[in-house]
Image (cartoon, rainbow, N blue to C red; front, side, top):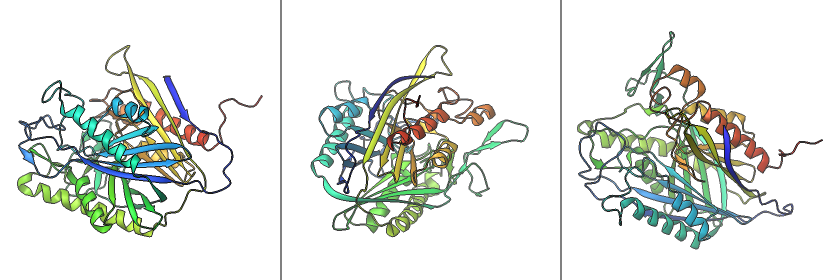
Length: 420
């Protein structure tokens, strides 16, 4: 493995002697495509979308401290790698980095795979980039003094969809209505709450690992699936706030009722799961006490280069970002579908009290890398590990280790040059 380039905004200023001012901005824009566009997520789906069940949105939480601006964008899409959004936001002075996180709904449109619909000169993809940039600009123009806190809860809403036999080999357990025990699994619900100085909740970010596939290929109506229901439920509990859903290491995690037929209350089941997750997130958010920063917000971004398992001699470039907020909140991104063990390993290795893996999140550059299995899963095989994956074996572990090294470096505990 070689490293293509590294961009580290360490901003090692003079030691802080007082609390650093944290500012935040929030914004939302609808990004729902019109009916008639090809939907993404299932090869078994027949035909384009026929209507819109619920809106798809891009929700922005912009954080600014000690001169660093980071825009976290939660998109109700399967994936949305856009170097244009990242570079233009930077060029316009809106954000030093943009984390484009996808909820991974399988009831949304094709995105980067088709950038010519409905016409090359006016594509839905380019229009969506424009909308996201405007929303980032809106958030940047409406910053307010903010306080922040993070916490965790837990809820079991999904299962590991890989059944590994004692003799080796993997059977895919896509659906698990009986809720049979499976593993590995991480029921952690991560919550970041942002308040204004008056104590009003302005943003609630929820990090959870589970595919957004309650709705299956029989559904041809655009929908945000359970993450959309979660957002609506949280915002009812905190009027005036915006909620964001960020996927974790969901590469091998499915909801119990995977691909629930529409005729068997598929939309109702998505709503039910979203409300259940919202209930736990609200419980965690209510017990948090957001405070000002005692330290700084620091960020490191780089593009890592890995071999392509499918094409000999070809490289896969993965942009990753590490964000350290006050040495009490850490965020690490992966531009694809990491298996849940990566999420668990990141948290176990980190010394930061609240460490979150943002899977399905494009940032510095590179490309969408697809499934990111563990080494063990690659040995076992199966969907996403032995097939339908292309990134070099061990890439996920390398990303986790790079993130941990970045956190130590940002905290000033690790020097690149060893002592003589």
